[in-house]
Structures are given as C-alpha cells and as structure tokens.
Length: 336
Image (cartoon, rainbow, N blue to C red; front, side, top):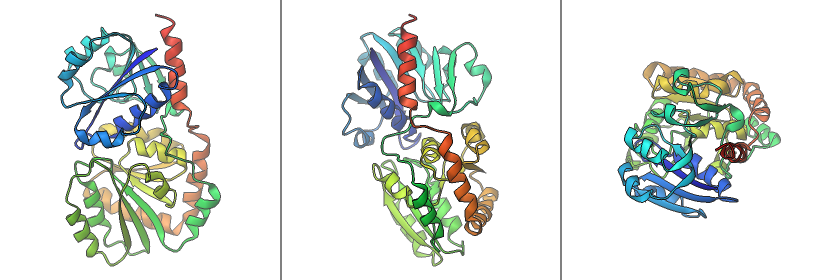
C-alpha cells in the first residue's frame, strides 16, 4: 500500500497536525510505503530528523501540484484548510482520501474521517462520508508513556503543587505569557513547569522578566520535544490548549484544564470532560483566567479529585489508535 501524508504545521497554526501525522506515518511505515509532505517552515525539520520515511517540506500548498505526480492508494490529510481545486486534484491521485483532522474545510470531499472523539463540530460536514469516531482512534506518540499510579500518588503528597503549562508548539497568541502574568499572584506553593515548543518565537526575555517579578512560586522554563513527557510525568496536572497534548495527557493519566481561543474547539474535549479526565476552562479571556485561580486552589486543597481523574483515564484510551486506523484503511482499500 502506497500512502501519501499531507499535513500543515507552523508557529501560527501549531504543530499538533504534524505530531499526529508523524506518529501514524511511523506505524504505517512498518509495512507500507510512506511519503510525507509538510506544508510549513523549515523549523519542522527538527521534529522529523529521525524518521525513517521520505519527508518533503514545502512552503506553499500549491507546490503539491508539482511534487505529487504519481498515484497513491491512500492520501491522508491532516490540516484545517486547503484550496478546493488542490483537494480535488489530489483526490484524483488516490483511491481513498482520508482526514485525520476533526476540522477540515473540505471534509465532505473525503471518503473517510478518523477522529479521536465521538463528537463533531458540525454533523452536516461529515454527512455522506464514512466515519470512525471515538477515543479508540486517538493517535498517541511513542514518547508519551502512562504515569504509574504509585508515582502519581507520590507527586500528589508533595507540599509544592507541580503544574505544567503547555500552550502548543507554536503558541502564536503567546498565551504562555498571559498565563504567567495571570498566575503571578497565586499564593499557594506551586511549581509551574512551562514547556515551550520548537515553534515558540516570542521573546524569552518577556517570560524571564515576568518570572522575575513572581515571588510566590517556583517557575521553570523548559524547551522540550522528546523529553516533554518525562517532565510531565512529574506533574499532578497541566494547563493546556485543548489539542493533541490533551489527549496524550488523558492516555498518560495527567488531569488537565484546557483553555481555548475559539468556541469551535470545545467539542474536541467534550468527551474527555464527560469521562471525568479533563476540565473545560473556557475561552482564554479575563473572566476564565480568574476562574483558573479558583480551580487551581480547589485542586490544591482537594488532591483526591486529581487522583480520581488520574484513575478515570486508565480505561478510556488504549494507545492502539494508530494500529487500528491503519488496519481499517487496509480493509477499506480492498473494497476499491
């Protein structure tokens, strides 16, 4: 089976699509021929340096007209937006068109959607295509490991509350700085692990200046990639942006509070909230940032709630989503 992956990644749009596609491509590459195109800046090369399949990084999506000339059995799209004519052109190069992004402006033109949640942003968008929806289709990268419950208990009994902040690989809106400025007056003894991705291009000086004015907590800045889950395994909860990392945290057993930039993103974590694994912190605005204080204080004083959320996660995501997706695609291909 010849598979073409096409994803988009940049500081502005984030790197979740790239991480997800890379993980699925690594599994597919075990038995199939994989070609991998990333539409984005050269910074993504650092996130693909050790993969074992063919990688092409292009700056504009229209370059695909030139580079995608051969036929493929399957094309897997992972992005939110693409030009309609280009999507139609690419569909003609494959037997099956697949989206692994739950939001895509040409979803109706896909043959199959795989999504990590049973909910959709708009049921009309997926009408008429074959859908495989739910937590069992969650794609988890190899670096993400489950947190042992005994270790999680030990982390909980520490006086210093250990909380991670990770607002995406790019964090275009610089929500990291907003959170640090908001939390500087949080009085309870806390260690904030601030994880910055490869695409973080904002001023580190601004972060350091904000930290220097904070006399209430310990704050550690860390530029992370493969070591991210080693650091997160030492925390008792994380403040995230509701993307790919939120689902990895659910698999690992790390409770999360998720702050969003758009109401359109809410459905992405609804199932995790219902399963008692994650908290919906709402839009990133002043009112919800004040509520974040209350939520952190509540968890600090009621750590049994965090243990309960950790235990809830054990039964919802098995980490075999990538293998499951590839097997289904193999079966679907036999129908053509």
